[in-house]
Length: 94
Image (cartoon, rainbow, N blue to C red; front, side, top):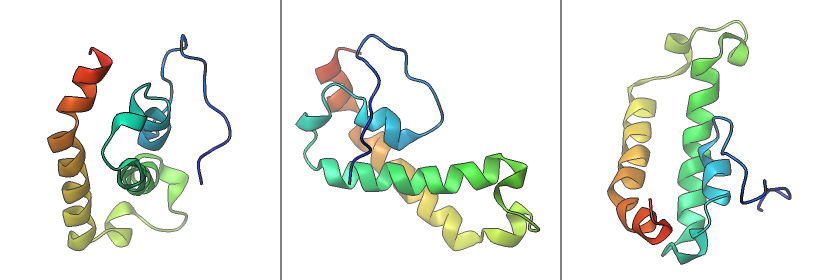
């Protein structure tokens, strides 16, 4: 389910959520599989916040919470975005 709010087109992107940036992307509906992009962005958001902010994992360190498989998953997710972003950015005129 998509979040109910979105900033106006003339506003600067703000925040750390890849999912929010994707949902605010003006040509997102031209992506071949928007649902896949949203899932990848949301999964990366879940990896980012707890590892970036010290209170994201109460009573645990990042090293105690994330393992090699988590790293491999994160790398695969970001590869998907990096390998597929060129065409949408060209559509946007970036």
